[in-house]
Image (tube, rainbow, N blue to C red; front, side):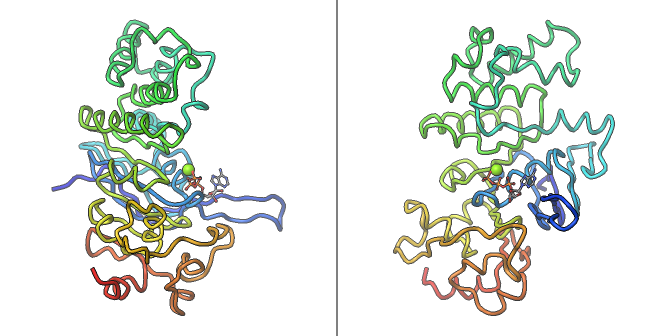
Length: 332
Ligand SMILES: Nc1ncnc2c1ncn2[C@@H]1O[C@H](COP(=O)(O)OP(=O)(O)OP(=O)(O)O)[C@@H](O)[C@H]1O
Ligand SMILES: [Mg+2]
């Protein structure tokens, strides 16, 4: 049986923006998200900018408060309800769940040596007894992240983007986490270096039995890396599936539009696929019904009035009133 490490049910994250009595608005950055992340998997989360990917990742790391719904972490004997997690259990969770930062240029303090950057989480969390033990742990994880141990005494400015990203990865993994959220970890890098970093993450996943949530704008990156993909739009999940199924036959018009933005990945390579037009609506003023209807070429009346729920009967889940009809209409 497959074991789930992370389970979210009806998870919502709200931000209050604006000030004063009349200007305050609630922004639903994550809205009623239900998902399971299998232990040991590489779970991809894609969607346009502002769709709520980072916020969902942060909610699963308990880095932002959950407004509604629940999120659970389960690993063997350990079972945490993230909503109520506090004290020693929260401290333990900080060790088990980590973030790899988005931008390796911004994330690393220029005044700390590589050794100190990697060692900091151990010291903050009090995970090692003395400097010798800390150094040992730092060297061990640096080697796993294919960093040259001679470089531990240097400062981050001496390194290229790819090497800096390895330093960020080592820092995230030094506490021995099980669950790692990698937020656009390769987006700031050159394509060839991106591939190296992705390969490293895959190797680390294998060697250390890690579970990744991999956040990306880029479906082609997700294709090569992830076992399972969730597509997000305006805080909602619109489609989730094993990568192979999603790429063979995407069901949601939004997913299809994301694919057609990348010609080499377009499953409907006859140029008929809809290009994504228009801007993502403001999250403080969301459309009624299906949130995608304002940009969807297939929207009909019901899409404007009734929000489609994620159909969860199979492992290929989709939230669209018309997906079946549309699949039938397009010959395979
Ligand atoms: N701390 C915050 N306070 C107020 N609003 C926020 C906050 N963080 C995020 N938001 C808003 O929540 C929505 C989702 O943002 P989020 O950063 O999660 O999107 P994203 O999918 O990660 O986008 P990107 O691809 O650009 O990183 C956006 O409308 C954003 O402006
Ligand atoms: Mg983001």
